[in-house]
Image (cartoon, rainbow, N blue to C red; front, side):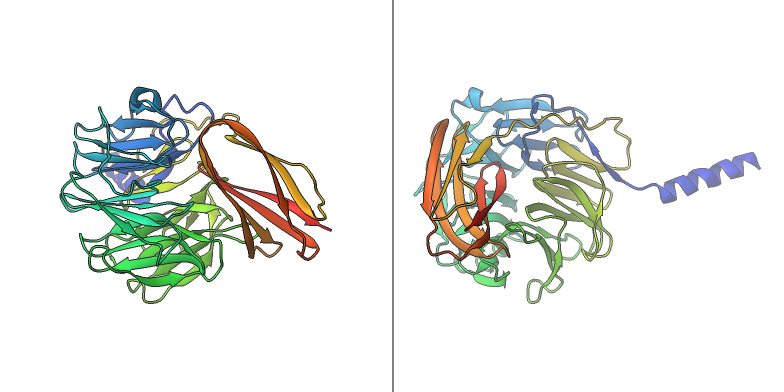
Length: 424
């Protein structure tokens, strides 16, 4: 009888056991909570992670139990922000940056060489996707211009596709086959999703948020039903970010409020159960398709959720997180974040001219835009390419604007920062 009860207890435990998000925390060099911008796995155990600000690549062969640093900006010579990483197989992989450089490896990430045969040279690669055995797509940039790169021979030769007719910024790309795929970002009308059926030669818009300044930051196509597509909308304060969802391949879309304004990461294991997160939040979970969200109080600075199956996933944030039934036995340690960007508003309230100072601690890209109290786009103030550490003073005329509350949106490689001002 005791044996039967024990068996029933074990069966009951296995039935109710659920996967949970846990930090791997074996990556020791991320001392200031800077974001791991991307994580990619070829299978349950073999994967890579790219840290943006520290420009480092890590590899695991045991599902994140241990990580080995393969490369950093010092070893390849330069000042980089690593944005994404993608592999065709266990040897051939690609590494995108936000600094006009693009790298390839043929030995699983031990060595990387600069790709220098793309014309024109892309200003940044914000999204990468490998499809089939030899096709790789990339897109960029969040700070303009909008472009796609494509190789059908494992990165030996490349095609550059100017996307300025469709968008002014692209950040995510995903292909179902070598010919059928999606790309997302923003255009003059709002956050956009585009679709191609001919390998990128032509595109149609299948979604637009109609709110200027927003991005569709991430896309996920549900593997069990490719007609189901999820997207995350990153917007400006005080607007809330959005989860967008289609169940018919993009013909019709539903939109739901997300947990915060600056939302990036999205990942679902079925049509109803998934997670979102962003620069200032960890994992928020939904089990009703995005209608309601629950803060799991774990994770931080999320950008990518990589789904493997219903019980296994990985995510990139201040460390690499794993969704698993296993107990990893690790705890998340939060350090004081070393802000890459220091912004000082020099006059507030303001009458005729807006003045502020930015302390850039490294090379960077910057979009400075103005939004009104309702989150409506007013105008772009500046597009900056920062080539070195520098303190810069800015002065912009705001004569003619109605009195009231406005938000300055500072969007750089490390994220979006908002400053509230009062116009007298």
